[in-house]
Image (cartoon, rainbow, N blue to C red; front, side, top):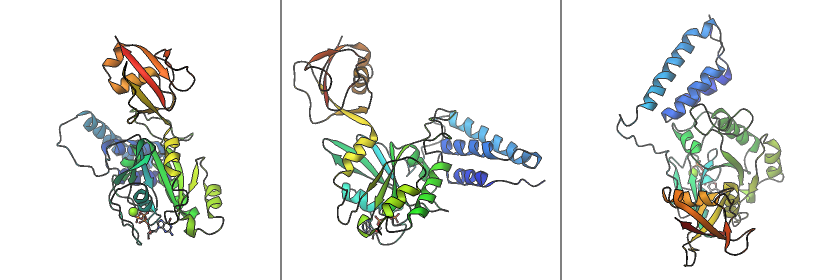
Length: 328
Ligand SMILES: Nc1nc2c(ncn2[C@@H]2O[C@H](COP(=O)(O)OP(=O)(O)OP(=O)(O)O)[C@@H](O)[C@H]2O)c(=O)[nH]1
Ligand SMILES: [Mg+2]
């Protein structure tokens, strides 16, 4: 009996083939099992997929047996947040990372100039935001393991070259994000059954504004069927580049907090960064996980408090607050 496999199944299968880690393979196999047509003709295939899945889950729980593998697509986080660029070949990804950081990127007039992730640090006021330049993806190709970098980042910058076919680029990039469950929408829960986070925060970074035909930016906005912020830049003229770090900071949804030791001035050079909505207790945990349980009281200077006000451990902090912690 014919299996009659669907396009959704083939997409999930491609995801499985390109998965660089066992976690990613598990996610892809679960998707394959979800979308595979369920009839006699697929009995064998489904049994085979279930076997593979259970084997992978077993390996995932047997930690530390194999030697450490080097995964070039695993980019350790540094700074206040990690922003990873996603785009088709020649769209201007490396030029952006090169313009905002000191990273040694390869900007070139030919496609596939970037082969591996290249991280660089972009400065926004007193914090550093990590940008990661990436190899391109196309409708039929991505480097094996590449999806892992997107899975682990804080924010995806979907790069669209305004001087090229914006609709086609959007189709390719959104399809990649949708099939890998990287878009937050009704079909993608916040986490999967294993507790892995699925959807990521995403925005659209439109480049080459200097050579864009009239209306290209508006067309990109109109053609994107997912709600996300859009910005327009040019690394050639600098348009939009000055305000890009502030925009990234906003999109990361973080706040800066300056810790003040009792009786001494606050350290205003090196803020802690915490998610919006973080409390005094979250700050204490960020400073020292064990000491946090001994936190007795706190004083706060900043938004919504008078200077030096005693605040409860559940007090919600704001960007640029100064906090003095007293441990028992
Ligand atoms: N006019 C103009 N050209 C740009 C701009 N940004 C990048 N370019 C040019 O576009 C070409 C590709 O830029 P890259 O930054 O290498 O593109 P990429 O997306 O990193 O390319 P891959 O690594 O192949 O994926 C280079 O010739 C750049 O000089 C821009 O804002 N305006
Ligand atoms: Mg590049």
